[in-house]
Length: 300
Image (cartoon, rainbow, N blue to C red; front, side):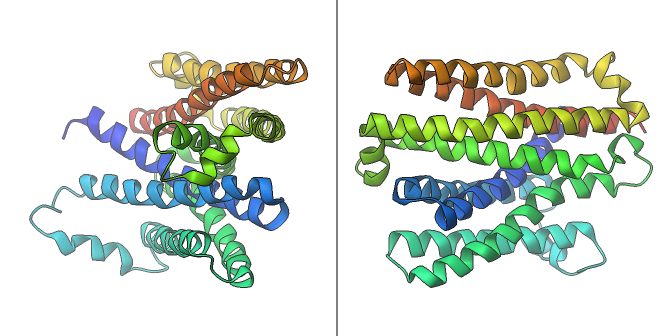
């Protein structure tokens, strides 16, 4: 496996881990504190978590180069709790996968309301732990000052919540257009354009707050890590500035512009612009992990 391919796989693993944790936090909070119109967002969030965890585990298996000849090698990841951060993360990720599966079953089979709320609370803890773990894992690496900033885990947590919220929202129109019969509740909400646009407007306010927070944490990360000049002026600068522009600044502008479109009653335009912004946020989330991961491999 080439170093470039390895970089993409590991960046994808870190991206999906943070996204999965963030999506479950969004799902649980929507279930706990929002009304009936946000049930679809909650369902979408737990589905995003479940599929993201599964895909992330597949990427992890691909990185275990001996998996083809020794399939049980993955069990080693569970053996050194709590001495190894990899083992801690494996248990946390496994717990989140089980919680998201239980939540999906409770949602779609009409499970007990109180049980679902209890599972939500447990899942919030596991979701935040999963999102933080992706940054803590890097910060524990010895001899890599590029990953040593105390702000890196917080940066990944905020990015994970932002990308999780974004993908949970994106799944609503995507599922409605391509699988309306399988996701009937998604389709019904999407067809109630005024209600759906209202949810978009409300969610985009949270996205803008999270984006500004991510920019602030990014500045703190750069300021507390002397080797980050590679991001600003070195070989990773193109990818870094693409992340800033595509993943943060343009989505901020789209969110502001969408508020004007919503006031003008242009519902279809709001949905189209929101989808464009959501795709860019997801791209930015991946680029953040890629530049941080690769930068640490270049500078020791």
